[in-house]
Length: 299
Length: 262
Image (cartoon, rainbow over all chains, first blue to last red; front, side, top):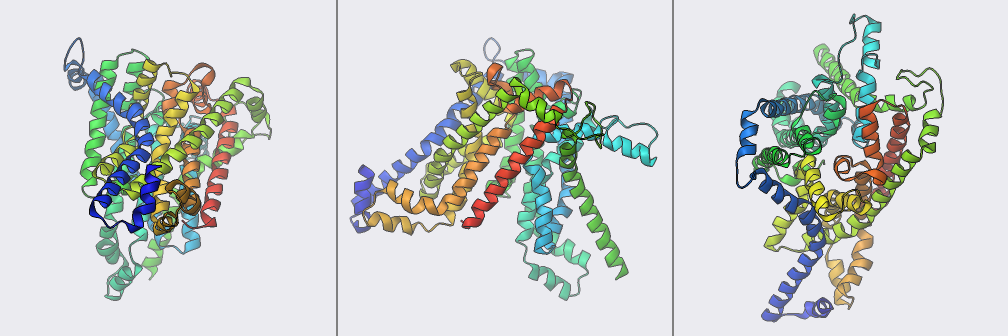
């Protein structure tokens, strides 16, 4: 009600004090409107995060024991190494597969580019579980891929494509590829075609124009896509758990096992904190170069 | 010239190959769901609806589906107004605090989901919200908020704020001015946000794995457990239904956007 009275007066306000009072009330109102959303995130995310950080330093009093374990015990080291290795490979593959797709979508005539984008977005809107299931069917010993390869005569015995790291990588690339294509496409779409034509009219070969004009202009999209894919992959759980067959242990699975099997909150929280620091550090560094909204835009 | 067309053909071939990779899993699940065989074979030997029958006649799957729908509808209903209010505030205020609060609201997208799940599990264990439907709904509201806020903020950017000012200077109070002038014009983005919230709640698996149990397990958690234990073709039927539901919603979204480009 107060806001109403002020607002009705607002267009006529010229007095400095009244205007200041209005602005202050305006700020209060805006913060109030913001508060339910902030409260939800605060209670369900920030408080637990604070507690997790506290737990990671706690073992009968302040202690660095949990962190020591991460940096000395083989299982922990190995898990982080596997997680980073898979994330690197997945990011690289997603870039190699995603860049040509985004490029095609940005240069093709509208009807064709819509088709390409639709084929990228359709799997994007399909549940991760559905896709994990599909990959299990496709890649298993007597699955479609093995049967076809055997049928054609390319292989003599079925390949182990699933329940291992390879299967995890294939399914993860599939799930994260749209996160690479969408920021790339958003960037490429904004590159003026005049520039490419100008390059060509000045005598550049298509490859030369692409390397010297188009590619450098698309780099912010490359960075945004790579960051998003890498960071999402670092925290991946469902796909490696289902397709990896329990042998490819990633950092998130270590957290989950420590809690659900051993109720070891100290170890789980220390792993979480290390994972979180990696993710935040990557976002922080990249956000100096590309705005955060642009990176998260596709998500 | 010859060399150029050769490179063009190989480029098109490569793109087609990657697109096939993207779409292949979806093309495999649908025929699987209509297969008559218990074993995974492709192409299926004969056509049947038996896995759909299994799904619809199993009380466990049905109660999981009901939980999922209740949670998804409630999430959209709660996250949308909260998100619209926050987006309105972000759009209208230049207060220094806003910059930080905006980042706080993006956090559910930035923090790895396993850590979100661990945190929510902890706070629910303390407050007795573990294994409850309201607990699931609130967790999904938090995860949906960034999507709603992003969609509505984009809508507000394309809206001329002076219209609301005019309505207010003509004597309308702010809430009425918003409801009757601003809201109808940003409706397509609000709908987009609501549908995003719904789909995200329907799809959410990770947090639900930690905080749901017993009678209140959503479809995704049951599917996850089923997939881990054995490959049951009922999953193909559910997958097909879920995928069809997602596509129907996305279609709705495209139509909502077409009505007025906000």
